[in-house]
Image 1: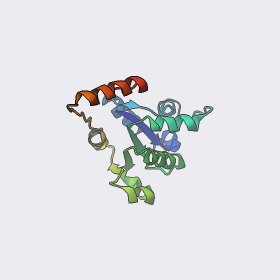
Image 2: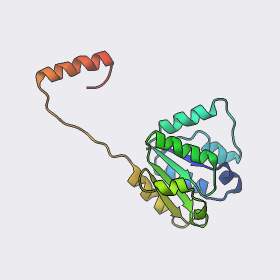
Image 3: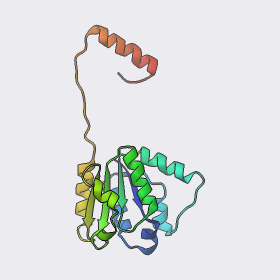
Image 4: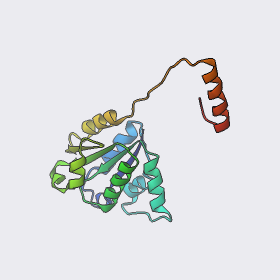
Amino acid sequence: MRIFLSTATENYIKNATPMKGILNILFKSEHTQTNPYASFMLLNGKSKKVAGEAKKMREAIRKSDLLLAEISLPSLGVGYNICLAQYYQLPIVCLCKKEYKKNIPDFIKNFNGQHIKIIEYTNLDLKNKLKKALILATPKKIRFNMNLGQDANNLLNILSKELKKNK
């Protein structure tokens, strides 16, 4: 599953939350982390300014299957990413360290359970709670089997060739 990890830059600088642990859990569970700057921030402890950064971030969120937001520390950027994920109708998992739960914004609390799942954690139970949330958020594959008449099958063949799509 493609997961966009969003967190406050301050998290990387102050090491307020276990971001390295979160990234390690994602990598070990064989999920793809799609935020192009998260790994850079962890290694360097500072942000990386790139031309067209906002467009690249929007595109990375759009192509993701899930937004994983660490919301322990307030951040306008994380709030913006959550709003984009809602716009693109992505499931959102918000992680919040228990001692920071007073920082959870009201707009996230109000949506909890619809498209947003809030998970409070401690350093001891982070791994189990995150793995469980990722399993629950993994999209289920649906396959349709149906019998078509010859006319419908011929029409689908023609359309798929013209539109260069699968039947």
